Length: 313
Ligand SMILES: NC(=O)c1ccc[n+]([C@@H]2O[C@H](COP(=O)([O-])OP(=O)(O)OC[C@H]3O[C@@H](n4cnc5c(N)ncnc54)[C@H](OP(=O)(O)O)[C@@H]3O)[C@@H](O)[C@H]2O)c1
Image 1 (cartoon, rainbow, N blue to C red):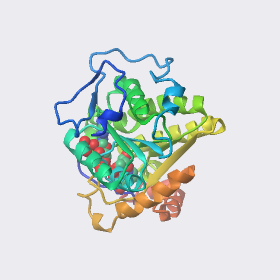
Image 2: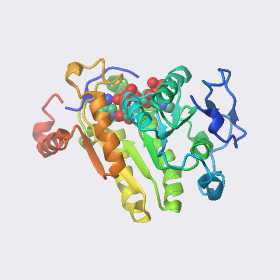
Image 3: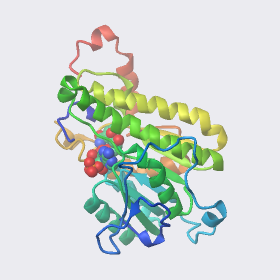
């Protein structure tokens, strides 16, 4: 069964290489090496979604000295799954731009990526729930990278099912972080990539989105919505030369699942990352990881509802 089912609550960079186009991008108080931009949309109106991102010209981007490395943006860079992918991308010398909301953990992930050999590491501290800040954040990241080959969306919350059953605001928080905020990010990113006929958008959804279950249907519904959105987006822009990937992990050993019963048997995050790094290189449409979850979920989907509702899943 999905890892996401049972659980209780669980809820920086070569800034020098970044352009600093945005007035809301302020310098942090940390040392120069550990600095990350801080992007916040607080107090500003929602951006006009019809407007393009405020990017440097394509010519300026192409003049970037970092043309050979893959340019990878990681949204939710302190996620256990993302961190393991970042280690592998760094080791092969890719250019990284990392976004997370915890400045200290972000600085540690960025420093580790530099040590492992990433060709550049830019970063921004941002609460990704803040959709008003997304266009500025994304423009800053793409300008910092000098283009974009891959955007990897890894943020997410499990939330607490029992709390979400009692309180709409708790349910809404899960839906916002796991569905609404990714929809905002992907809308901006998809339009950017489609205009350039290039890029891969890789999104961590979950096997939990494949069937509503009593133990985690709020989280599951947020992932079901995300899966449907990402699948539809792929069908819209694949013909424009943009790869859109729906990634459905089964249970993986990360902070999100560590309090779950039996979590010691969950998939190893390094092996999950190896599968994902290869799948992202190939731009696969739908990835179950570990692959056995494709079969497990086919069986779970086939159980008749009259039986399913009596199970304690
Ligand atoms: N682990 C699994 O078994 C599993 C299975 C299926 C799907 N997934 C999905 O895979 C993704 C990564 O999960 P994981 O296992 O790596 O869990 P994780 O280690 O708990 O990572 C989740 C990340 O999302 C970040 N995040 C949450 N809300 C955010 C916000 N508003 N702004 C910025 N960052 C935010 C968290 O930051 P903070 O640490 O600062 O809170 C954390 O870094 C999630 O979407 C999850 O739903 C995981």
